[in-house]
Image (cartoon, rainbow, N blue to C red; front, side, top):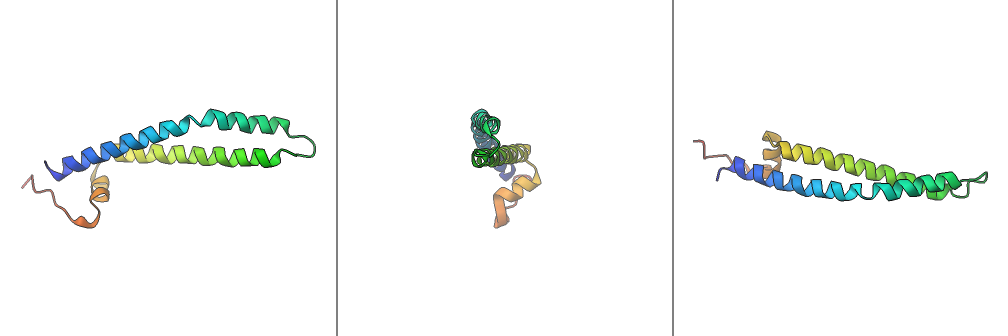
Length: 100
């Protein structure tokens, strides 16, 4: 099997893994959003729930960034190409000899 096909299969397998990871991270969004809006609505004049709303805002924003990064990595890996090929092979310097 040519090296190009092997790296394509490996990159598609990694893309599937990252896609599953991204979809599992998306399941946490409703709970964090509910918790964030619940604490924001309870904040009074003394802002006693500011810690919880700030914590939830930070958690929600990091989750959104993580989901976006996982999506971009999944898209990059699924697309394949020379950059993915060189990334997966690293500094091995393996040439595809099946076309010779």
